[in-house]
Length: 412
Image (cartoon, rainbow, N blue to C red; front, side, top):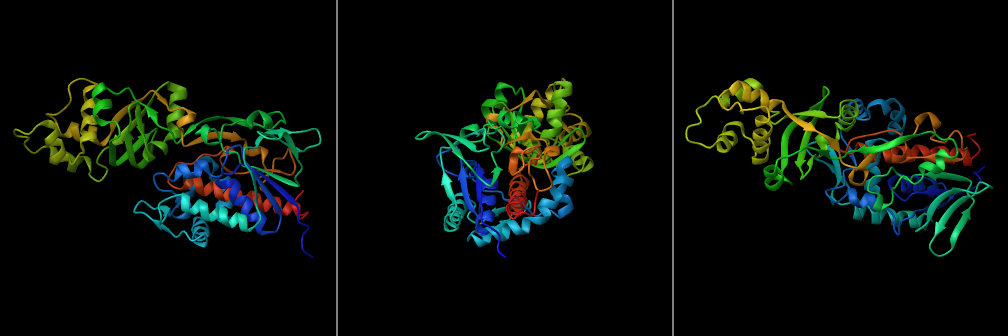
């Protein structure tokens, strides 16, 4: 006997909300997506500016380590909707994907907009309804969802199941502003404070570093903080550093800042060379070459890396240009002194959110039966590199499965 079809309210038109909407509509349920912004997927489009990094080709065990403490909790969801399943889903929308040399996976178009357009067309064909400019403001005394709208004022909506996919509080102008926190806390739901994640860090550069090298990339490097390493790149900014290698160390940097008021990140500027090999290169006579030319030719350093080395090497006194071994050691572990992190308004994502103890295995709020949560608004954290979006999609699939089971009478 087929299930009785019910109404589903999805609050939040980001990746998690849209994925859950697709799953539920495909089962025949009536699905309406509400969002306070004028259109869907605004932050999704922002993520695609530099190429939409959907997931990663790491081996499963290595993939899960990127989620740190949340790994055991997320693993069943990522097993159920894996990186391979995500790539198949993209292909089904006519957007084949490819893996770069780093293992990161992108649509072949290298953009978010074609994928989003195809996705919205599919949702339309499935009968998904969209209600833009609907600001969720909680529940009324009957349990109906309340929305503020520009035309109709406050409206109440009854739904058989609800998904909250409202994101964290990063880039609030694109829709996610954390305004849901007091609404859930008023219901007794524990929410960990939101903090900037995948954010740039603040470094007190000299005027020369700011003026000449802001925007320059540091490549082929390893960043280390509190014993944890991250390979990748970083970008010099007017106020510090940003980029994948820095983002991956965000939890460690935040912890050091909280306990010590400062964090030290050590940069290995030539990760492909040993200290011994680098010292041998630097031991060759410099002759009449300038220091910068010599470091470029002997150590293979880019101008920004040379400037960073000279700046940091000089902070403790005279730079050890006459000691190849000491120079090699410094190039392999150059200390960068971090004074703070960029704010939520410029971070890619947020740490904190709904405490995992508040959720069932199917991502339903224990205190609010029939209300589910997915995506970034929960208290897990992942670096960029495809791990963030993958978990948003996977948690949405799990939440949609839980909603469908409840609507079918198979979940209490």
